[in-house]
Each structure stands twice: as structure tokens, then as C-alpha cells.
Image (tube, rainbow, N blue to C red; front, side, top):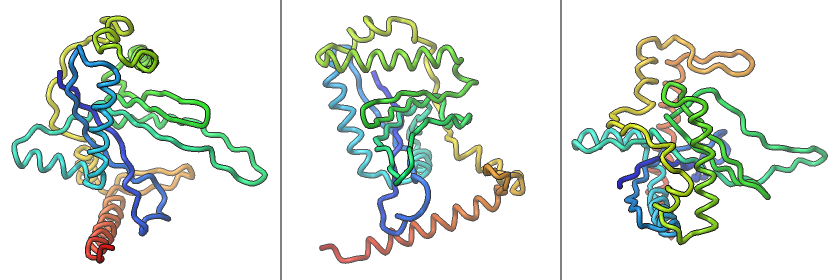
Length: 239
């Protein structure tokens, strides 16, 4: 069967943006062909290869992928489900005790996003979901099942997908087939800004607001700076 999901990759790998705040994430579509007879190890190898290939084009905006797919009458990448992984060491500050905590944003970017966060000595799993698509108990079941399948696959890498599904999942998560999607999160955001550019788009913890029109202007300026830096970098002699 065909399985499609998205991963998040940072594009902050250029010297000119080293001091800019933020992760500069881009969404990358991943597509796998999964057979019930495939082993967990084979599926892991396929997923790793696809992810490595996608990372190679991580600076290509997802919005451009969608636009080109539509222009060429191709299927638009479906990123309603995403997997986000990060490995981060705990920062150290002299004379201070530092801890890291996962904070809920209360805003879901996709229908479902599962986070795998690797920390020194532990791996933390969490799920972000849209309440209009998934109930809280279903989200908890999905996360618990993801963890169970992951642990079972690690302990028995030669087990087939069918065995993992039967032994761990059963039929608890089988729902109605998903329909095609022809939109992404940028569309509704842009439409809202166009409809009312003076409406607040960002509110910081001090209560300061940034209007949608001003946010769009700043995004355009930043995009021009990144494009200029990329063009300059491409024009430099290669050593």
C-alpha cells in the first residue's frame, strides 16, 4: 500500500542566517510503498533512504512543491500526518539548573503530528492533533500504539508489518479511507491576511500585536534576503 506523510527539516544551514532566531523549518513529503510481508528492518531502511533523499532538497519551499504539482496536474503532497524528530542536548549555563519541557501550542498545524524528541538518556513521544479531526481519546490511543509498535519493531526487527499490525494494533485504529487533499496551511493564512490585513496575526507574551499585513511584508523581506544570499552563494567559485 502507499503511505504518505511529512517530515520537518531545518533550512538554517547558511552562514548569513546563523544569528537569526528560529528553526526555519520546511515540510518535506515522504512516500513509502509498504507490503504486509516487509519486515520492520526493511521498512526502516526504506524510510531512511527516502528521508535522506528529501533532506537533500530541504531548502525547496513546500509551497512551491504544491504550486508546481497543481500547474502540472499532479497529485498535491498530502501532509495531513507528519512525523517530527529532533535530537537536542540540554543547554548549560554557569551557575544555573536547566531543564527542557514540551509546551503545548494549542494550535495544530496538521491533522496529526507525532513528535519524537531524543534527549540525553531518554526519548520523549508526544502528539499534536486537530480536535475537529481526532478526539482526545483517539489521539492518546494513536500515541500509545505508535510507541508499542516502535518498541516491538526495535526488539523484533525481522517481524513483518502484518505481524506487528496483528499483534500490537489489531483493528482498533482502522477508520474510513481518507479523501484527496488540495490545500495546505498557507492558503487559509494568506486568505485571512488578504481579507483583513489590519487584524492581529501574532500576539507575544507581553500583549504586543503584529498585524497580518505587516507580518506578510516582513516575510517577503526575509524571503528576498534568503534568495539573495542563495544567489550569491551559488555564484561563488567552488573549491
